[in-house]
Length: 229
Image (tube, rainbow, N blue to C red; front, side, top):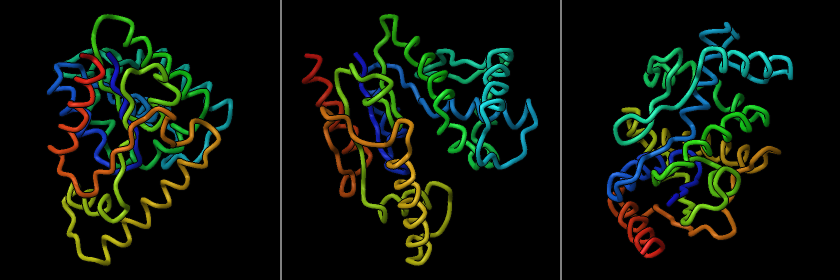
């Protein structure tokens, strides 16, 4: 079984997906981790200037050739998957501020999305059930997923969660500024030409504005049990 959880930034989809996978005994697959791995290759291994704002077709070819040559991949590890480069885990480096500043531009490139999607789909060909989170999992990567959930919350709630996650204070002016940034990111994701952010036609919409993490998880676990018997 594949459970696809999509949603905008700071909607809680990654933490929710991890907890859902644990509750169901499935493996958690974070699609964004591999995009971060590709970004790490561009910045750390190929020396692209930071932040990356856009890539030419020639640069895209260089990045993907580097990712193949350096054996960038996802390997099963514990309850999920680990990003490896040259056979060594790079789960910490891919979360750096430098990578975070550039990953949106890298992940917006069609050829890079195709490269990542082929590797994500390859991980589903065995007998392991997966919970996968991202922005186009139910629409592009796994349109045949048995359960698709589109998880969202108001920009203000998401902003507060994001600030708390990174250890910042949640004064009203900080929340308002972060909510504005998230709304701009939403607009960019929803209007991009390649794999725009949107719910799959058969996705279940789940607004987590008034739900705790535990509440979100339980809703999805219950849906999975109904779908899978």
